[in-house]
Image 1: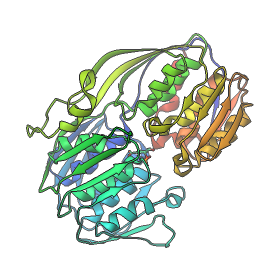
Image 2: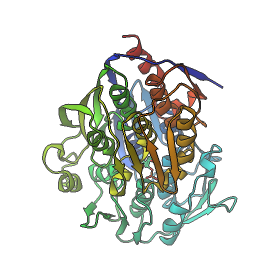
Image 3: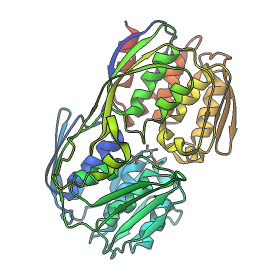
Amino acid sequence: MSVKNIYPKRGIKGEVTVPGDKSISHRSVMLGSIALGTTEITNFLQGADCLSTIGCFRKMGIEIEQKDGTVLVHGQGLRGLSAPEGTLDVGNSGTTTRLMSGILAGQDFVSVMSGDASLNSRPMGRVMTPLNRMGARIGSVLDNGCAPLRIEPGVLHGIRYQSPVASAQVKSAILLAGLYADSGTSVTEPALSRNHTELMLGAFGADVTSEVHEDGSATAGVMPCKQLYGQKIQVPGDISSAAYFIAAGLLVPGAEILIRNVGTNPTRAGILKVCEAMGADITYLNPRNMWDEDRTGTGNCRMGQEYFGGLHCGGGEPTADILVRYSMLHGTTIGGSLIPALIDEIPMIAVMAACAEGTTVIKDAAELKVKETNRIDTVTENLRAMGAQVTPTDDGMVIEGGTGLSGAHIRSCLDHRIAMAFSIAGLAAKGETVIEDSQCVDVSYPGFFAALDSLMDV
Ligand code: S3P
């Protein structure tokens, strides 16, 4: 068991460049593998989850070169994967499992995916149900709705699926299977979840559409595809990793932190809205777009252009540098369609709420229960250990801020986001904080503690 000791800080100043976005890194390897030609990915996240995705596609015959931060994927086309020998190891990665189930559903070979104990206890019915309705033949080996999953060849038909959850993993699995179907496929979700798959599919040459309806629900569609074509992908910094340094800047008295090259796609940037609502001092510098306006020359990047408009537009992913200064935060209410845009940041937001004046209510976030841990439980347990007042609810939590945090032993339960959120809590707490199983940060942010220490040394 690795532990990390964290001590209170004041006046931390400096610059951080966070690693590449996890969601975009996964997708670039997946689409690169089923596209024709080479996909060159720069600033790829070398975290354990994304390495699981690389490992799986290598096992299916795709040559993938890794050189520093650049990855070259030598794609073999939509039908160019080959039958893997043995089980595909998805590690701790829900994104690998769920998105790949959509791709595997369209193959003419049998495959089995399995991961670690956490992964193998997470619900997979949410992708098996729609994919099997399309004609896929995916079964839970232990018949418990979880991985290991066994995927047999099937003939896929397009569907119109009404998803009960706003989940980019579910949406993406269906859209990826839709590439292999015999007619158009669409997914409607109760609120717009991250749209990296739609943006990237468009850039690789697929015919993708997206629409946000008046009631906040959203529909994404894809047409059957003959071929995708390899692209150059520059992965923006991960806003979910930047979140820890945004919070450090806001919570540590006298702090001033510049975080460079952060992806600010609105479907991911809910934490920035919350910070604003809590009274944070944040300045956005150098806003730009990572990709060209129309990378394929096919005009197929239209969804990004329709939805984002203005400053952040184009077919690709918007980014900015973010300057954060220590702020007196106050409580807020977070719920509704904002939740999918900040779902992974809720542990960090909960810590910020505990340090803010007044009450923060987090609602409509029952999805927290099916992440790497049940994050309603793991956040509540650890915030309470630090002396905060938290009441868990069925779909979130209520936090009474302003009581101050005390250092504590934090049980990360091997959940990377719990380990990192409570490391930041430790900077703003009184006394020593000990993060148990701290190595789990490698899942999404290898080098997190080195980056934190570099600020602390200032
Ligand atoms: C992800 C989507 C989210 C998020 C996960 C990554 C993705 O899950 O929590 O860390 O890359 O599509 P859901 O879409 O299931 O909410």
